[in-house]
Length: 264
Image 1 (cartoon, rainbow, N blue to C red):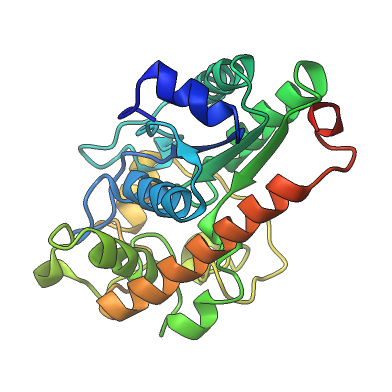
Image 2: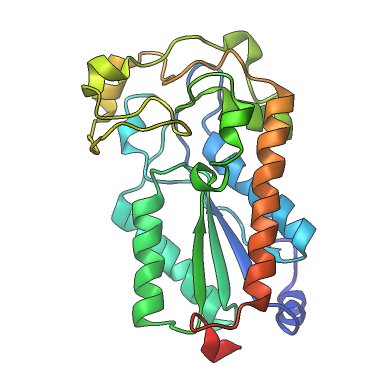
């Protein structure tokens, strides 16, 4: 969208009303991953799915809810309430001009979700009952494919998300800095937090930790091994998620149920 004029956006709205909003984070991703991993994930998923489906994609939001990584230099975090206000204003702007299918694409797996979901749920309930809001996250969109792609447990700065960046942004991953280090989840979290975002989870609870605590239990910033990072894994992961996003667009275009029914 940032490359178009307002007249071109107006012309788009004459035949389609879908918008992707990529939202990421700027935070540490171990010794091999750049700070922008989560933003790059959101950008590439949104842009590639948008191009394939012929829908518009907004400029990205580079900052997210990352205070738990604040013990590492370069991490830039915004408060949950700040993110919520920003997302609401972005969505209000889109809805005002006629976009009635708004998809937030979250590259900051899991961590941004509370703020994003709360924001658009309130918008739909209180202000825009005729707009369909959706929140898409690789954590859920790749659940069926990721176990067949990765070779070890996958967590923050692991082989799967670094493979994704390696595939779409060659040169950003420091391949000479890949590490086999990770977090002892049993020792640190008492068995209540799973060590694999795409694997079997324990009967668990959400345990909060600070940036300083994280720096203590994972000095490198890596939660799982990144040694298996490859372009092939990144391609398989990326293609699966983009495919699912395109299927979502197809559904949004034909859906005429109670959600968004007032807009046709």
